[in-house]
Length: 408
Image (cartoon, rainbow, N blue to C red):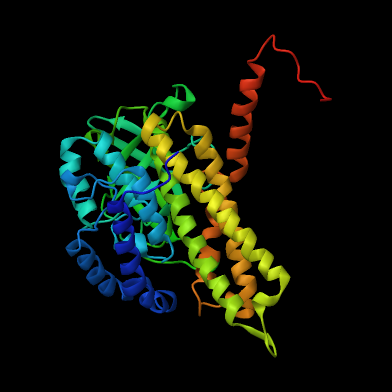
């Protein structure tokens, strides 16, 4: 396999890394020390600068104002942005807007695209994705209680969602709701666009995550839908097609997440190594002289590289063969990279001692907010079970084949 990158791609990544290091990293103390909305004016200036440089919305189609990059290139950009908590936001490729834009581009009507997709990609509005429910397992997306029943030319939506990412200040939500209760489990739900100004859309609260309630884009909300009426024309894709669209969204979405996590790994690794080489622990001795710290560095380097190569290979496979053919690979990277992320972060925090627990470095923020990597988009355990079943199915299908000998 050819692992080389085109010169154009290398130059693009270098430009992104230079901008992040020079323009965004200096803003991190303000991001960590004050409410997000206070920082928004400065971030809007940075967003305007990104647009001037032609780096805006790297994964979105050119006809809608994006760069139109493929999944591998976008993954590399995501890695370059991941080391800064708001890197993706400044470049217009943040979750959940990136995934929602992809859904609207592929499945929404021309009218919905005109009203919502273009301003979303332009960064004029934000959106949220409303699927997870309070009392039902997010690991099983066919188990939903929120309903959207037809009344004339409208859907009437009732239910409660939570961890609706970025609902605070969003212009619209994409809601997963049951439209056909009697259908087969995977054909019961549809996706519906709901403007947040619609009567019956109630933002109950921003859910506190490990003590951080958040606001605006970096937040997760509990939403209540009470007789919320939206036109049937706001449905995205065919009726009963919500599960299929969600799966198509999550496949490439996991590439974005995993490469973002690897960007965080890279940042944490750099902080770990800097700490190891500069922290005096005794006269003439630094932290990196200790063998245990050397082991942390070696293990982190190997785990990051292995996770990175598998993720990029999965992105390439999705591009070449489609997400269905890459389902096994997608499951692998989900739990492999999430585990790598948390181990590298933990080592970096440990190396920083008490400092690592404070917001004087970015490590504490990453540690709090990325623990969910092993939970959201399907818990690691679900992905492991799914992967193991696919592997074992292949062996069970080998009927008539001789059993492998125990002794060689």
